[in-house]
Image 1 (tube, rainbow, N blue to C red):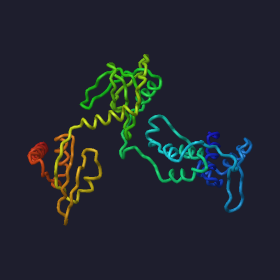
Image 2: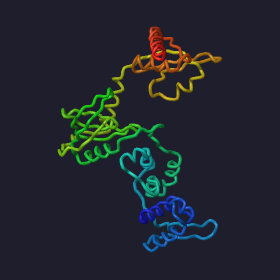
Image 3: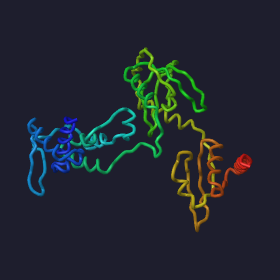
Image 4: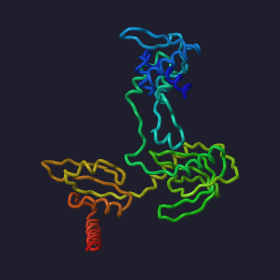
Length: 319
């Protein structure tokens, strides 16, 4: 751990140019006495650390001591700073201790782009997780990863959306994180490409049988095309409604179950005309019922009768 801390001190001094003993101790969560011992160790190892006295003093590195990623342009460097959420890294077993990974990248950039890079780093943070985290079976994820790295087949028990469980032998080709949800892309026994939601893999076991990865397969391209095909194949059901202004905030807070196609003008507290697009008619009925009298269907007219029928069934169930 001390070696990691010594490296972290060098990274911080390269990025901030000068830091006091107290600042370093606070950042690395150690005592000031420990930092002083670390500085002696760095000096003994030949690292040119210099202590400046006075109110504006602190530790710094000699100007000639710089490590660089030569040839990196600012736009390329920005791409390196855009890391996935910490949850995604933890799912993969990637843990960064001490100084943030982006700080280490910044330390390795040329002086001409370091200032612009820090400005970018301090103003952008990517969080791809959801507000409510779901529990992932990390044991299965580790087994899938191991088979993936070694090009070994997997025996999985997969639960479909209707609850049915099936047993399959697949050849893992890659893992994709969409938001905070993991998907396994694999070849099935018929050598067809398939995507499996990892949370639905009830059981996973590596088979002692290898496979040859398709030479032309590119995970990113497959996923983009697969996602596009999936979206294009989704059914579409459009409904026109009038919405009480009091619930507009709730209506626009999330697009998880519905696509808000258009929002019309509202005057003097009158209902706002809104066009909603769902995947199915039943999704539309359930969604509209959830807003009660605050949402009224204008088109299609026949849907009103179905909403009334659904409401009557609910009332009867609780009588």
